[in-house]
Length: 295
Image (tube, rainbow, N blue to C red):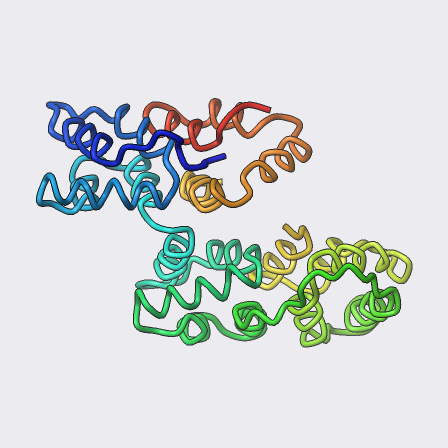
């Protein structure tokens, strides 16, 4: 939904933002209008020009000028997608307690390429390995699953459909779970974390031939807590304001159109209408701009 603007002039944008920040009462609308309608690389050029003009870092200036959910969203836009994801992962593991919801949502829904890039950027930004932080902050089977995902061993989607492997995986999931006392979580983890998404979708279909319960019901019967949430997120194959912000900011230059389509299919109303109903003010205006239209 966000693409590079055609007649882009970073100097002009930087000047407008400087004026908007200096205005008494701050012109949030102007800041939103410019930054939500530019691509990530264009925002970086604006930041460069802004610093030349104002002798001040744009991110710090925006931090000082904005607050609350709007600040969270606009600062998110100033990072590349991988930087944003890496920062969100880092803050989910900072301080007391871990924000498991964020960890699950991000690690379980990013592709292999995205995870490789996030790991690289995480290392550059925090001088630490993502795997190390994840294993230090989680435990048990939940940690094993997240680590298996972060290692990014997932197969690439293939044009060749391997029916035998689909059948074997479906049977293995059944035999490692519903068909025995207790769950062989290791088998589940390896299938859920290593197979390509199109392959998994077919495995889940095939699974119904073996099991009296579909994959979601089986997950709910077999595992609990964070592990259950993680498997359910993976089983769906891919709401606080932070989650909405994170999804829209991190996907608006990747696949937000697809997200919009799936959202409408699942909930019977558009993402645009939902944002209209549940948010207000400048934050709402910024989200709607990024959302890019009604379906």
